[in-house]
Length: 475
Image (cartoon, rainbow, N blue to C red; front, side, top):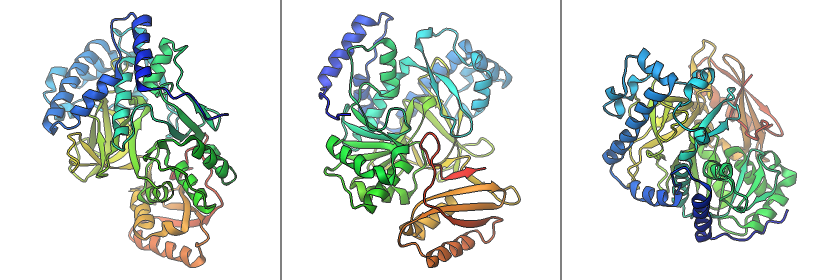
């Protein structure tokens, strides 16, 4: 498919966008991500206290709405003996019970607000890569905020709205599809998809993560060079593979991208280095969930952690007892979506594990997650049933001891407690001596822990159907 497409100016997008709103929607509201972006550009520099007060004001409205109009939350509040007015500040959130996918799936009809019109419901689905497929409703009114937030994050590495980009992710489109902006037949549903899925507003070149193979690399790089995107977005594993194959075959880009946004998978520092060394630009880690509209946090150029857009969500990092973690402490990430009034997500257990951060030297007031450690599933079990964060093994091996220089890809497989297989795709520099050194390092790391680790050399790490290559597989 040809890559060229007529460039659509920001002015033209605004003109057609407002024309659509004026002529086709008669429901008494206006969707304006451009104005929201201007507001966010100011808000990001406010003091921590001002942003917290703003978030609490939004939270108070949401809690009152959920208590009056969402049966599931009304019952949970009553059972816990709490009323929305009892929540005097953000720290009082801990008095509200945490909710997970299981409760929402099994009480789906009661999780939907009875007073919100049906046209505001947008059905979303997760892929089930965590073992729990899940469908939910997003609020179409939240779409412009999500889009404006995405634009804000892009601006942190010099990208303007509507810039061309390459996405390497799940096979949503045929591999090598150029998706250009289209407004001529934009329906209300199309506008919703624009706001929520960032689709029609963006000229992008989509590559399926499943197609990033050695034999396809030359073609992929040639098409990317022809397209000349401003930036890249995609799965960590797919971007790493493309970097590996480009280095192997001596390929490079004929332009300098502004940056790379990594999504959907945990980014290790060794992987960041691999991508940056080939793409010749900075990599920015992001965090998001489809359930809450996509990306809600991202690194800035200081890269001291991920800034949370507190106008979108509240994020708590809690320990096993549900208490807020202190600075530098890791725990479960609990999210409250401040903008979904159709199917509220209030203290939603994401299944992810993060480390509580402070504030960034860049000067932004947005709260910080120091780093994302992975999913709760990214823990291995010892013979006695204790859980060990996988990062405590991987980070020393590949970031501290430097074994990433000898390995292109790796994946852990745990079939039973106390036993792990480390699959590695070796580089030419990988030798029996290196393998022995890795084994000795693992033994030293785990000398007081009941886990045995075997190393298995493989030609390739097989992806899931989605194109993701999880760092840990439990069978």
